[in-house]
Length: 310
Image 1 (spheres, rainbow, N blue to C red):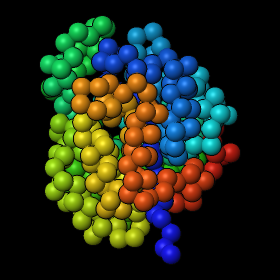
Image 2 (image 1 turned 120 degrees about the vertical axis):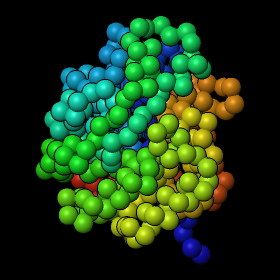
Image 3 (image 1 turned 90 degrees about the horizontal axis):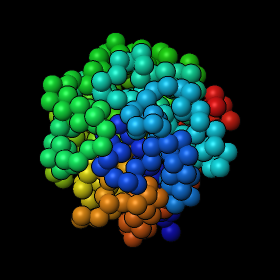
Image 4 (image 1 turned 120 degrees about the horizontal axis):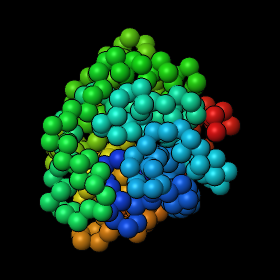
């Protein structure tokens, strides 16, 4: 009898897209982020994708000292792979965005594979009652924002982190980002297996139609063959439907409150763990098995949790 395929669940615990006023369940303080991450790992997430926030007002921060207030606690309490963002916030310069990953030497760091318009402003109509002034400014400024990730920026992040044995979650928001990744692979600046996170549903990137997902898959297959592990990130209400479709096509999956605040139509997710449990139920219904952290490390050729800098 053939063995069931292993699927890596990544949980993006808190990010820079949603703001604290949008959901009372979004973790903000180091205590909240640690508890949310540990809960997601206990629910079945093999990888925890982490941002940090200023505990005072929830503003995104890339201060390594803030990360140090929760990373060691998560490492001590779980076996999960820890993945630190180099995306940070769209308004941050690349030198600021890469600091935590460069200094703390995680097993995995996220890396956006190209510049793009990054439209968050439609959220203003859905969330009119924002508590902090910075939240409205953060969303409004995205009308005139290019999230800058030039070839030089990408090379700088690769140079700063690769020497630490850190590997990457390559976040690809459009077809051109796959070609950018192929460029770096051809130059030998990245090594397989590539962990390709296909991102759907951000205004400025590829859409959420099933044909969009299949187009990304066909292109990645053509460019990378057997040299990559594919994962699906659907933003907002597309989170579970696209993850389900992707999983049926051979993908790994990503959920979490960074990507979607919802557990169903009109129902806010009360935790990251709730979303992990939901996608786990889907995977098991498809007769797929959830990968353990040890299995995820093997699938992605990671260095191991004992070789990080926290």
